[in-house]
Image (tube, helix red, strand yellow):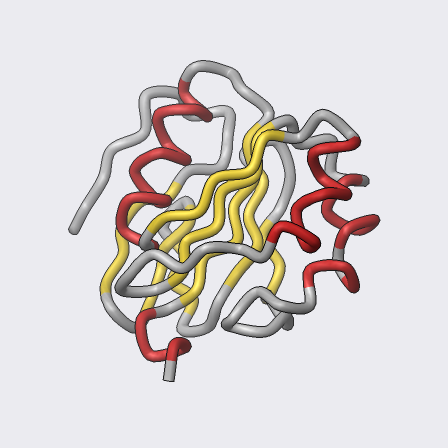
Length: 126
């Protein structure tokens, strides 16, 4: 699905499919971490998101206020013990399927929110 950004000064998800995600027109065939006010990095964490503690400081250093988890084709819930570090720092965390996370990311970014997202591909769930 092709998407159109409302603001051109921020990163946005310009398109996505089951096995790729495009940010500002550049396509990625692996899971990514993207920050509207920053950069795109490969996501090296577990597809099950059970190793978030290994990434907490790195994610918090991006300055995001909202963190979206696009979990592939279907929504997966993040274990509470993995969320506590984000909540303690005042970062809102939402988990949803990747397509919804891409759309939500763009809406929040266009509002000027400090949003970041971990976007996993659909085949990452296997």
